[in-house]
Image (cartoon, helix red, strand yellow):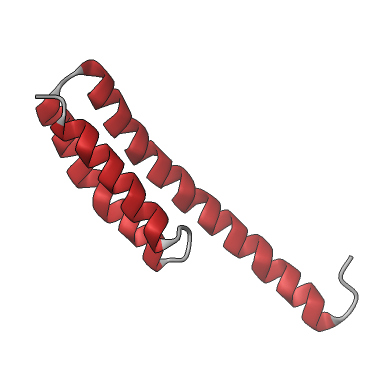
Length: 87
């Protein structure tokens, strides 16, 4: 348990940041799930549109510090190759 005023404040800030980052992660996962579902259905145009919507969300997560840059790039790359393979 936090004892000093500074550590109490840091605990409050950490909880607030945790909630914000949790919401961002959840939003990004929703976009990724939409791409996965479009790929599973075999609809290339829907998968492409979903991927186009997911890319900026992932990179926004990077700029906000939720994901590492390489993690987002890897996810985008793998999803893009799967969308392109739909043919």
